[in-house]
Image 1 (cartoon, rainbow, N blue to C red):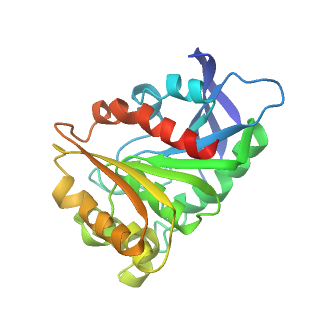
Image 2: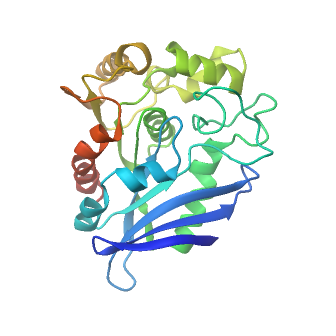
Length: 276
């Protein structure tokens, strides 16, 4: 693992790191904020999954999370959204291919060789972080934005024993039922919609997956709210399943990092209360 950059910020260290990934067969880049801590202490970890077109840099530069993480004593880890490199297949357009990995393990050619973001996030990167940073892997939370909100919800629902908390900003709640998700899941996983259900938060809940609580913030002026995000479907599924969903529609806020940064401290405090 190579340290690309490191800065002092808010009583901690913000670093960016690069390593060769066995899962994606590419170099992958991620950022980690580590608050100052006593020697030998282990810190809870909050994973942040970014949205369409983003890299690790979007939240690292615009998320305004460091002060809140320093107060709470929480590590903040932000990976990239997809594999990158000259040999990685891509497609014209911004909502598929590089920058739009959808946190799936693709099964369809040519995407299946490199697009293995599920295994990267669920197995490879946690093992790397556990071995190289002061992470308490018994205390993990996960959050994300838009496509990353979809990733956070689905990863937590598939592995509730790993995560003590889950939240999301404007998540794609039911990708099987909206254009972004239908395009991505159909091409990465093929036409059999039964295979898509493992990557759809609403479908996972319908099929029996459970977490105790979920926090979702959604901008009321988000241009993607009705056509792509569908928090109403998540709310209905959680009601039917008895999951404690806190869904906050924030009037006037859009889909941008102006929205995310406005409520980031709330989410970090929410995770901190559950991770201890």
